[in-house]
Amino acid sequence: QVQLVESGGGLVQAGGSLRLSCVASGRLLNAYSMGWFRQAPGKEREFVATITWTGGSTSYADSVKGRFTISRDNAKNTVYLQMSTLKPEDTAVYFCVVSGSYFYPRRSSEITYWGQGTQVTVSS
Image 1 (tube, helix red, strand yellow):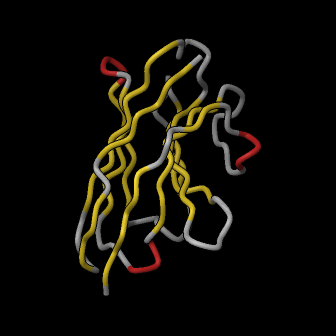
Image 2 (image 1 turned 135 degrees about the vertical axis):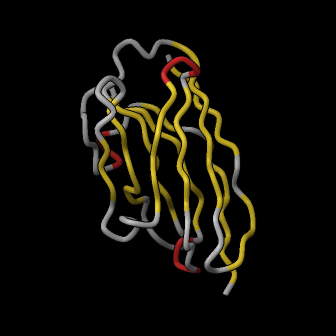
Image 3 (image 1 turned 180 degrees about the vertical axis):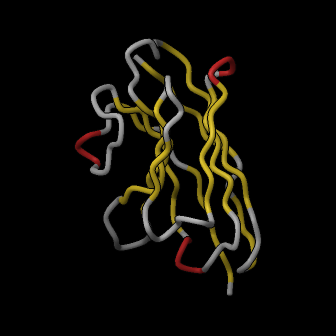
């Protein structure tokens, strides 16, 4: 079992930056990747970014490419999401995720563990 605890969400003006953190506890030996999904009001959860746990290869949604950067610290079992040039459409609950089967998960069905989520609100 893996537990995920996110932090770093909040309210920011458009064009600003935030950094999300996610600390994982439990058995990560079988984790293929960690990352972030998000869910805006009235919308389905969507892929944001993932990073493979061993090689550190990254994958991004087109909507955040060039603005968001995902990184990890294996020694701390922590994954980060640096978000820059934020837009109002980035407003959502951001979920930290672990996939036990996919290096580059893109669908919610490919995720094994979910965090509780942290709210990010971008004002215009």
